[in-house]
Image 1: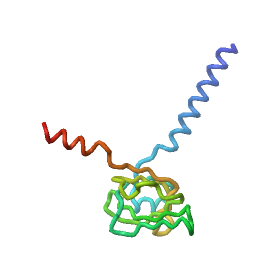
Image 2 (image 1 turned 180 degrees about the vertical axis):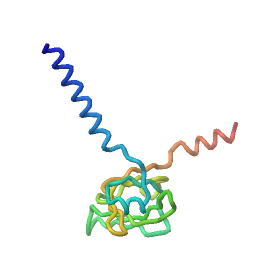
Image 3 (image 1 turned 135 degrees about the vertical axis):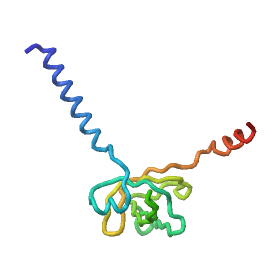
Image 4 (image 1 turned 90 degrees about the vertical axis):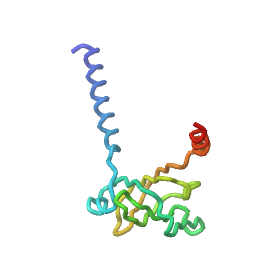
Length: 130
């Protein structure tokens, strides 16, 4: 077998490995009910439930932040984030939490937030002029 063929085969195997590894993180969004049924790590997209308590006490536990999230089916559930409270969390329009259900609590290892755009007021003003 030629050296170039061997390098090509190794390259193809490496490419397949990278694609399979990267596809592990590709997942669909679930609801709290689906997360409870599956008992696997899932992503839940929703809005903050500002009617319920948001608690973070860094003096007691800096890696425990508790809030409530309303999923796409309209169910509000308690979420414990195992990291410090993100800056401007209360201003988030949408939150995606990754984690697993532990009883009736969703334990999240990471979150992504969609914060309001700083250009939104400017956009509204420009549209009003048109």
